[in-house]
Image (tube, rainbow, N blue to C red; front, side):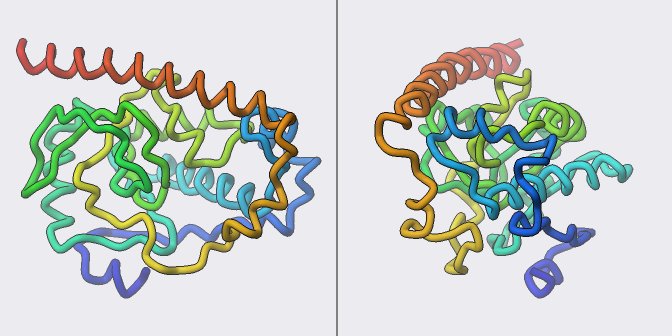
Length: 235
């Protein structure tokens, strides 16, 4: 990351990550193990906890600075050649967003609301996008999420997908400028490793219903935010 960031005109600071394997999970006030179980259908993965708390630590460090915007990157983020121009354009239209995801595993079923630099557009996602590799936050978003995402009851990228529940305007950039997977092995675990945390099928029913509810609410909020965005542009 030091090598990659040296090529970008960005003032950056490394935030030491939290190793979840060194934590006593049952004693953490910022972790709701029972809530995580019924919302996600799995037992706690210490590495997932470390990832979540590391993101909160990075948000808190951003808030202790005097910066107006914070670009939070995971340790395998990568950038397109036109990344500085894209960031500048996003800041020009900051009235349209509170946080912008610049990487994602899924399309997000985007509805474009503003043209950005080059081929990129700012969009409201109507379905899941997932991934927290590269995210641009406003101070307002960081302040709200630093409070409202405690205690942990979902993996961080899942919790962030529900930012609209906290009165925020989450947006994505399409086409996705920053790759979600740059080929590095995740310390959270591969598919085979993660299976060990899954509950049996019947115990996962509440999580399935929770995800269905999330998708229905996301669609409703998304349609409303698209209408609001276009209404603001018309006025």
